[in-house]
Length: 300
Image 1 (cartoon, one colour):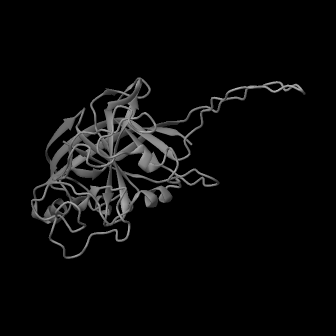
Image 2: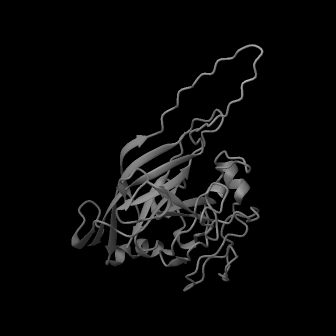
């Protein structure tokens, strides 16, 4: 079932300067926090009515069919973001603020993850990789005790290593398709929807584009088009207004869907939005389960 969910996201970025909170600040990349999500609306396309054709014995009737069906594997998230950067001591109950900065049109990323219960620590932000559809799928997770952070290993990142790597032994295309109820041959499978290496100009089987711009998660740099990506539509079709990348959390063996924040761009419906994202939900066969995504945001 194809659904579009409109979200208003309020992000509060807290910066603590007191020693009692330094463990929290250093444990996570600065600026990544669980987002307060205010769902506004959820819509879907109508079911078309059937037309008729009359059969007459002794005759052969030739006709063509043009059919449009709702996606049974994807949902859409879109909305606007208001960001607030605060300088406070993080006191439980009554927080003391020294200063704050409001960002009406922030830059950064919106993240959607099924891992954990929504606490920032439920995603291993310091070890994220590019999802790799050709990974061997034999050993997801960070290799303990590793120090080599060269691209193509699953060792923890070495201090000062800022370039994202591709997963090698983590989840692959077949495994992520199975996770969300797709068959590898499906035209709307995960690896047909997201493409690596910036496939563009309608070069894929669905006449879509897949470029995205460079971005940072914490201090890890994700170069343009290294990870699988997709350009989500504006009102005229595929557009660089809304870009999304597919990352991988090897510690939790989970994909991380990452939407790049834009500033008041023309959206799929002709209205202005700050982000648009595709996220999978398995409604194939008799499955009617919802997929719960925890929303995080990083603004700059």
